[in-house]
Length: 168
Length: 340
Image (cartoon, rainbow over all chains, first blue to last red; front, side):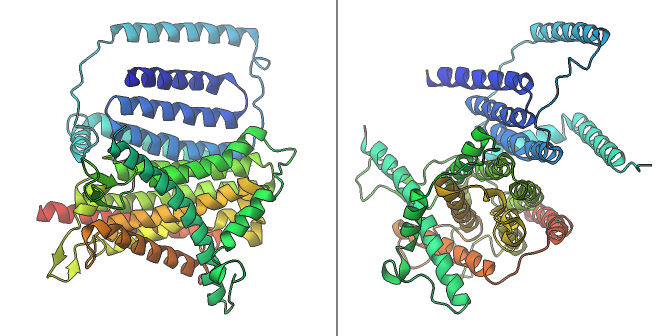
């Protein structure tokens, strides 16, 4: 019963907060609502008996990455994002609408193909489950892991190159 | 309602109030130690040796008017100190401070002396303290004042830089102990080498302990790393615009964070509640003593060392502390693999 209520509470918070992130114009509030959404997601992980994943979610996303986001928002100090709709022409808006429709169909297609797999409960948050995650990451999923780290490295190099561009 | 439930509830109540009291005590200790370091006497009017001074301070703060700048963001300005204080209190909830007790047979099963036992306690503390920075950053931004904003910016930059070394120092202990549970990590330190040296992780991780302490000072924004509020440059940094109880909440959060960092250091490196002489049910006295010594060290450092320059702080964090923490972690992992 408790898990049932908690699940719907966390799910509702996550969805509403995520909608509000894109729904309102103050970037500062967007960042904070995203943190709230991450927090609710962490709560869902706890309900799935995966405290390690939950805490990692908080440390990495809500902790480290969002602080960087806040840092950027504060440095730029944009009080309000201007409405994009007024700046865009009719053609751009129509293209956007078509693209978002395609994207929605894509998500619906992906979600209907998804089969629910029973997941073996991994001993809570003991070091055993951490060890299992680590082993899986470096053996079965080693390629994906290395490819992702390369991708992040490329993005980082790109950011440095862009930031250091000389102004003439 | 079982006796166990009531005992647990009382324990939570006790821990909460002890944390508030520890902040009050720290204010007194800070002023006293600072005074003697500067060849003064310090507060000695309210109560014996000025012991009641913090309560007078709190009363003064409560009576003051709550001010909010007109241009401030009302909502964020209000929740910022709450976020700070709440994160500080929550982080302590997973720290064990004594062995299990049945209160001399009153309870049907032993009650562990901690608010809650989480098997990923080390990471939980790390996660919650990383949430605490939002209080400071939001306060800095929502005040709509340049000093506050600069304080908030510095704080986020400092936290990101030092959190890495802090986490890597913790990781080395986790590798050594093979557990993420603070209780298990403390119990792993039971016993002695050659009958004299206690099996504390500080003797296996001296470099890790130093890195942890240094990064801990930066995490709690204490001198010599107190950039977010550097009073000579930023008036009072992120809490410039705060007054009355909302200011007191930041103050409270800072001291409770110090207690938490010291308590984690005690659990991970100094054997927690383990110690000689005292029987095991009085272990919490050892815990208290060790935390107190670390807290004294903090105060001592603040009134002895001058503040760094901001670029020195960044250089130290990224070019010295972080590489040292990485080497420490890799060396520890290699040794654990080698010995088995």
